[in-house]
Image (cartoon, rainbow, N blue to C red; front, top):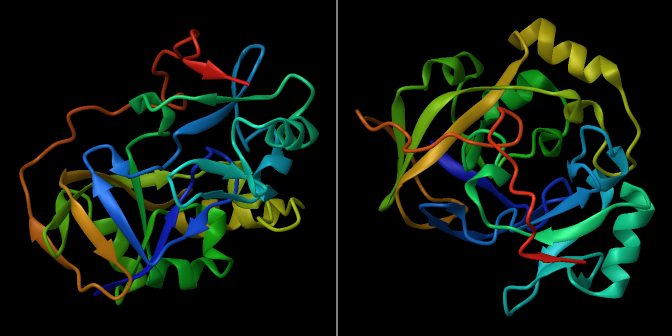
Length: 236
């Protein structure tokens, strides 16, 4: 078993950036989802604004989130977000734990992705692990993934939403993709995970399953009902 994919999502619901290595902190991958899109009534995500999922996002050499090649707090980035998210859409900096849907890492496994039969980017994972048969994914919760010094707890299999039906390049919707997850996987695919021990993860690193008695200190996210802080620290 080894790491075959790494992604960070500097802006929640925008396209991810592929990485060769990642600093894994107690708060997830460094720089992950530190900006989100907000509207007049709270967060806006790809669940309702499909076009956001196609917008390129990245991180500059000095760690600033980028939108379409522009600094996230620039006028150019703001215009892109309004174009794809609607006239009330704006970018907000927020590194609170509620920005994650459930936990701060999502791990996909290659066997399940192969059975899924579509672009892994539809699942929006942080890590892809290779060398795991499809049927093993559902047995992994309650264990931990050791990657060098990094230890990642596996909590549960992720219940999937309509975002999986959106093509990450075109924004076109194919509901058959979502229906396939429901019929073949019971609506659950990829693993809700959290960081037990921080460190650096690289493509090609060996990984192994180990026992653990750890539990996540906090599960949060707008999706499962954690309160949304209405006071934005920085908004544009």
